[in-house]
Image 1 (cartoon, rainbow, N blue to C red):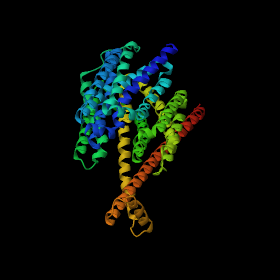
Image 2 (cartoon, rainbow, N blue to C red):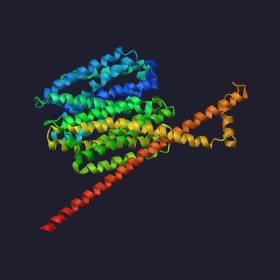
Image 3 (cartoon, helix red, strand yellow):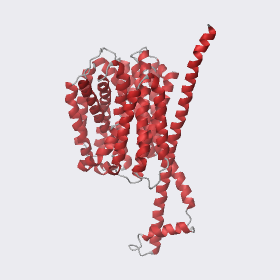
Image 4 (tube, rainbow, N blue to C red):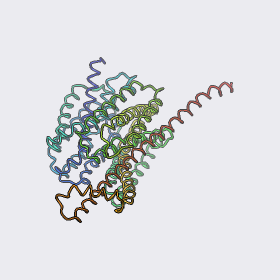
Amino acid sequence: MGLGKSAIYIACSVLLFLTQGLGMNLALANLTQLQGSLSATSVEAAWLSAAYMAPNVSLSAALVKIRAQYGLRRFAEIGIVGFVFVSLLNVFVSDLHSAIVVRFISGIAAAPMSTLGFLYMLEAFPPARKLTVGLALALTCTTLAAPITRLISPELIEYGQWHGLYTLEMALALIALPIIYLLPLTPVPHGKVIQRTDIVSYLLLAAGFGCIAIVLTMGRLYWWFEASWLGVLLATSVVILTAFVLIELNRELPLIDVRWLASREILHFATVLLIFRLVASEQSAIATNFYQLLGLQYDQLATLYWIILAASVGGGLLCAALMQPGYADAVHVLALTLLAAGAYMDSHATSLTRPEQMYLSQALVAAGTALFLPPAMARGFRSALAKGPSYIVSFIVVFLFTQSIGGLMGSAAFGTFVTVREKFHANILADEIIATNPLVSQRLAQLSGAYAKAIGDKALLNGEGVALLGQTVTREANILAYNDAFLLTAILALCALVVLIIHIALNWLTARNLPAAAATTS
């Protein structure tokens, strides 16, 4: 393939990733701004995210076999037509209920788009570079939509709230539609691979993963032990997934090889990806909410998001240059070092912290996130290919679980951690506020003095000062809680780095001792 045609395929891949990524992130990043136009509370608006993720977290596993049976071309054409149709449905959204229905359908329609993005990126490279440069660039593209969403959201919200946001998605989908038909993928052999039991197995997998996605998305908002339906939903997911495992263990040609997933190698691989996803949640689940706590709007954060975008691209390009089997461990060491350093720098934030103080730290986190995933995924994909094509679906399930469900776990875990730590710090700060303390009295007088001209009653004026001081205490407790979350992320990354270095050292010692042992034996 010529250089010009490769560039066209890469550009098409970027467009498909942005189309899918913006569709997923536009509502998620603007839930607060959308509440008014949808007449919803903050908790009700969060159902938009749950409705999207419930079907999306598992659908790619089914698409592997669908693509193998019906061919790439038909898969691509039907996938893009479905996405265009669903994007048009956003025009008819008028309230929360219709928005939730459309988001659920969007979660289904978006799954083929990310798959097509990967396929078009890999198409641009020769076979020797598909799992190195191609895979690194494809995974880099998956990180671009989040910062771009926050850069363009203010103008879109001002243009037309929900309809303004998704008019862009519809435009991108319509641009991608003719590209899919004019720029075909290389056909691959296909045949009848879908069995009737596959349908039952997938429905069980989708229902189980969907229940988990809803619990992880909504659990922190309804609080884990307060809403009984969360426990019922979680128990239901356990029962459904247990039935799925029992069916798959007794099939001659299972949809997913559960025994292989339970092997030591795959469990190690899944653990590595899950820890990475938790650490990488620092930027999406902690930093973004911290900015909202400080009252910063997207237009005030524009430069920061440009830096994050540039660092993600730079990290991805560096990873593509280092994507050789011998460099995988070194890339992971560098990635975890960057993640740990960035999170630790963020753990010293105060109420006076502004985006300028987080430029370097967030750039380190973005670069580390872009560096880590491609080598790990390439290693796992080669392991699955070595076992046979049928194991690719099993590998996709591992990858999806650690990234999709892992991302939700990161948001839920850190969100819960921040809430708990905020209560802890608030209690400590409240215990230190004593009315007889001269510093406290002085602060109360300063806060209430701002209303002295409007409120003549001294008791009411003092009450206003106490209320304002309480708000200040709550804000400071939240900032301390976010600092704890940043520090926890740094500790997790550092622990993972130490374990990785020990693992590399043991492998080196084993490889060094093998020739000596062989020489002694001979």
